[in-house]
Image 1 (cartoon, rainbow, N blue to C red):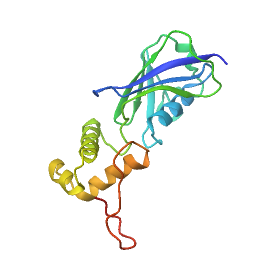
Image 2: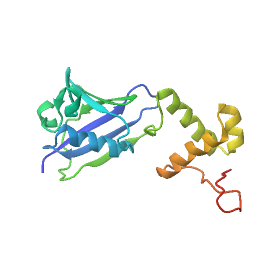
Image 3: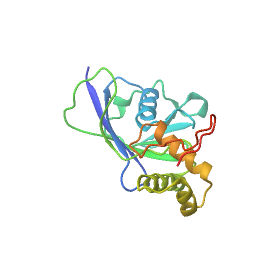
Length: 184
């Protein structure tokens, strides 16, 4: 089946956070939304919509063009913006031959998309700083002092990354008591 190649780039972050995707050319915008969700590791916590050259496309209950009816291929060459809660991504068609596929695939990946639990990019940058400090060998207590949030908040952040499969120093329980979930 003929395929489309697109690059999804999170706006407002450096270094870049982006995914290059290939998928069948006959998909609708609702499918593109689900593909982006999967590629970013998101699960549908926020509302979303697309802005395609000034036309808004999204869920039917938001008084925009119905995304299930609009085919992505009809807008080749258009400027597409994807809004998902506090996050905005630019979507760009990529020209040139791509492998034909019957299902969506990630061709290239760069950077870490923010966990859905982040309320904005500022919190995302703080989460990345937490991960960097953890991987540099700092303890949860040290990270808590540097960043200025509770040790429990640091544990939750690190758990989110571990759960999502990011390469990081492993979280190891330090308490031998059953039911205690302390990590250092």
